[in-house]
Length: 335
Image (cartoon, rainbow, N blue to C red; front, side):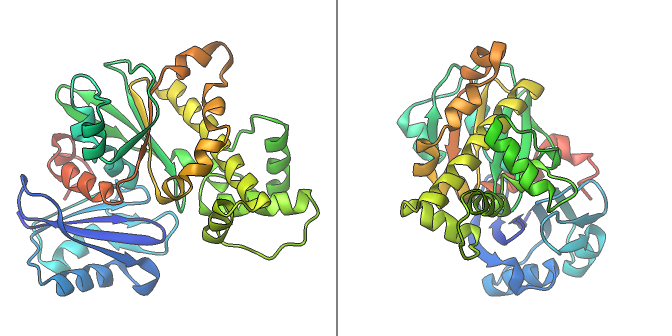
């Protein structure tokens, strides 16, 4: 089979190799997108540096993938699936949304008839329990998390297979849930025509909230990147920590909205580097309170288990899983 798998975000790209269907993903390599003008350059570099022979490709991409031309939402990379096939002399190529791949990366965890909360199982899948809850079997699963953008995917179990319902949920209108969030929306509306949810739930979202707090408190602060704000938050910088806590509270609201819309009562998995790196701030924030703040439906969302993934390579596993998933064999994503 000789399958190249990739998990390509707005900032970084991970590559791996799967010899056959039953093999583990190996030869994992992390690359920065900015160092390569085109995705073809990154693929060529990875193949050469690992001395691999590739026959098939499965690419997890931050953006819509149903058309032959794939454009990343938060990255200037774009590619033609057919040209990629021809360039690398491969038999087939699959391109799927990155959070669909993230979801399928948890296939073995969620395919079980009942979710296991044993420490051994959680350790194996590199999952941390934020809230145990009571999983409702035969309902959907939500996969989400802030990164370069906001990824959202719903997993449905059909027979013995998991089917990812892909979308671009991070680009819906931001809907404030309290007075402070209304102020943030008003602040951002002066700077941009359309304020999507990922303008608050992403790296640049953290930067936007930080800028708002400097403005609100009339503090003359220097511009900071999301990485710098996160580091400052972990070092107990007041404004950076408050910005991070606000972001996680908004994430809680976004999660509960998606639980209600898509009936995701079996569980929620939060993915992405931001939540992992700022785990201590997440736990200090009003995240769980925001999830449960749903009026008459507080009990409905309050029972849903919430997990945090700490597996950096889960997207690669999901890309491999997707290539073998029956639902993608006849899809527009597959050539």
